[in-house]
Figure (cartoon, rainbow, N blue to C red):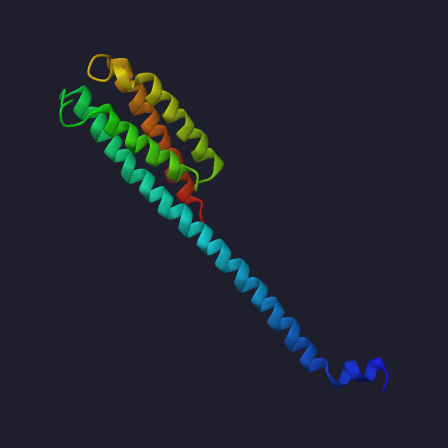
Amino acid sequence: MDIRAQLKNNLLAIISLVVAFSALGYNTWRNELTEHNRNIRFAGFEIIKNLGELERITYLIHYDKAIERNTPRDGWAVVLVLRDFSKLMPESVQKTMIGLFDVWQRNWEGLGRDDKAVADIDNAINDLRKSTLAAIRVLE
């Protein structure tokens, strides 16, 4: 039997095999994309939640002078968690997080004394919030 006859006799099996491999490839790709999006969503929601906590700590220290209950170390802990979660996000969010980290590092000692410090921190928090929400919105 020549190859043409074998192809003709087994055409249905060959087509079925091609369809099966194509479906498997697509399903694997889709599962990977779904998991990637799930990770970004989870990290994004955690970032938003922790930004609220950092904002709360910042305002309590600055406006309420509640330094005995909320210390800048509490703020540092939240900033470090934010930095860790930002590593799971797109590069735009990571860059914005670096900005927040730098702003916090330069201004945390001015909380309670310097209105510019709280304004700079608040602006950096809002920038990261906007960047994170934008990253979540574009997910498939």
